[in-house]
Amino acid sequence: MARTRPTLDEIRHVIDRVPEAPPEGTFEIALVLGGTVSAGAYTAGFVDMLVEALDAWYVAKANDRDAPPHDVKLKVATGASGGAVCASILARALSVGFPPVRPTSDEATRATNPFYHIWVNMLDIKGMADTGDINDGKVLKSLLNGAAIDDGTKYIVERFQGGPLPHPDWEGRPYVDNPFRVIVTLANLRGVPYRIDFGDGNSQTYISHADYARFACDVSHTNRASFPPGTPRPDEFLVQREGRAGAVHWGTLGSYARASGAFPIGFPARRLDRPLAHYDYRAMVLPSDTGTPLIAPLEPVWDGVEIDETYHFLAIDGGTFNNEPIELARTELAGLTGRNFRDKEKANRAVVLVDPLPKPPSLGPSRFGNLIGLGGSTLSALIDQGRYSTGDLTLMAHPDAFSRFMVVPRRRDRKKGEQALATAGLGAFIGFFEPAFRRHDYILGRINCQQFLRDEFVLDATNPLFAGWSDLQRHQFAVPGGYLPIIPRLGDAAMNDDELPWPKGRLTPEAVHGALKGRVEAIVEKLADNALDYDLLTDRLIRAMKGWTADQILAPVTGKVREDLRAWNLD
Image (cartoon, rainbow, N blue to C red):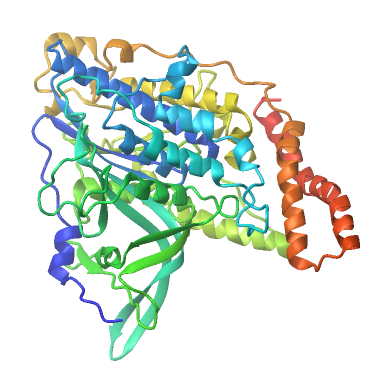
């Protein structure tokens, strides 16, 4: 199909616009929210506390209180899977006020906080095990029902209203860029075809399935802001409440976030639509003899493909190929070929990665078992290989890199990573079975954010960011080692939450079995229905055997639950 593509200069102008340096006294932030499954409750709690701290600081500045005078600017949130869901909730909620959820908050308060209400109250196994999606001749699309995720999407898009912003003079939160960018990763099952031309008629064609989508979200209180030319970019959606001319409704962002969270086979794949022109602005960076990186645009090849100006595709979990979209966040701050200062005395931008599931190494098999096992190991190897960038994680861990920060779960009892989370068992699905697990991890996310802002998200006190600080402020907020915090905690946000008791004894393997059995029985009957021509005898036999069959299928699941409850000291 013949299409008019942008020129190389036009592509470079869009994807390699090196942003201007932040204004003096301003620090720019990009959030990266890693994949989560039910551990998204932890990320949700972290973001809840981050917004609370920023609100409290900026309200103090607006009211002329003695608050550190510098500024921060939250520019983008990238996310995969449950991290994409959290990023989308953040964008939707930034234009309104909502109460933080602390350990002592009552149920009415919890229900009005969008992060808590979705992750703790709504995303529960009761909806996921419902059989309404496969009854009455409907096609089996996934092991679990996606209705609970659909309900969460409808809530944040349609029913969530929020209240006034924290300060009456604000048209929008002053510490947030408008438009606020959200970038979600996707596993594109249809794929995008590319061809590399080697000259002399030689070329190589391949299909890319690692995908992402960009959104420029209007986070003003009226949600009717006007933007200068160039916003949105030609490869992104502009999101506004009514879907004004040239814009899409919040439901489009919700649909993409829902697709990014569609765990393979576990939840249904999602059908998405986007302008074909979005793919005209993809490129790779190549080294050159001069030391200046070269940009090589990637040109999709749609020859012979039945396609129009709107591209339709199925998508699943964004964490399949890019579980921690650090590079997408970094380039939003520095440009495709730019870089951010890393030195603690000069840093003026940073990427903050929130990774609730930093898994320890888990090697695959060394011997052949059976074909099914080999197939599972192969799939796991492909996913593991595509999820992480060694260079990105190495810089995150470097003690002298102050342009990248990483947050992982930590409890007071020194448990770290997955072991600090109640939701991490059963491949991080166990949290869907017990609200107390999700509530524990939500509060832990808040606590870890408090610790991060106080002790780790810091720069050297000589950094120009702090030039306007008074001696009293430097003394009040001093961090050992000669550092000062980038986001100071003031007012109620300066108070530390107390950890919730470890939710031991709240879930049993038998409860998991009971929650899933009806769903598994319905799947067994559905599969048999598709494979066999029913007669009265067959029908009775299947119905008689489906309970036994479901028990056999669930036996290893409940065994794994028992093992993980014991390993996490939750039994």
